[in-house]
Image 1 (tube, one colour):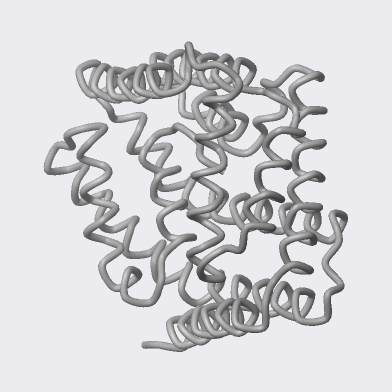
Image 2: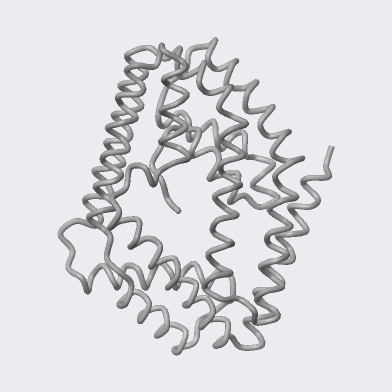
Length: 280
């Protein structure tokens, strides 16, 4: 799930995707990403540093064990070949719950800081989000169906290869058939992103009303379906189910070597998460 957003969203996505080594440098990475969107004053920087430190302590102790637990269950489902599209949908829902808890933790820190932004800082944030939006439009708009499918094939092949090793021709074909069969939502996705940025801009302009800002950020960050059409939501649900079907198929097509490769990587990640959560 890539989302555009303020630095808080980038922060969480980075944390959720970090390995053990990456986690040790996470504060530096978050700082670097933040600087892409806004330049803080010395007072805001001190506020941010304190909030980040508290977040990382909480996240390490409270959230990482939950990530490890979910991955252990996911590993078992693959090993027992009990993964189904419905089980995959439940996994996706768990991921959403991780994000909801995280946002509720960081909200009391980010609302006052964002409320203190100057007009110039707000312009910086929105300008960078617009740059991101234009880059996505250049990447995807104007391409025909075949080109988009080829891009999706390459993207998914790369991600799956990272976890199971070199793909077989049958696995590549399964991925290609998934991309051919899933519903196209590119236009709806780009429209949603555009509307998301517009509403964030309005929230930032009204940032001095902290109650209103808190409500707006909660909706934008945790209730995205409120901004999506019924058609778009249905399309996303269908594609999630189809992706679950793809994972089931890839698992059935996996070689013994691929299964061992996947299990080893997953086990290593689970060990890292558990060790990080127990570290002082």
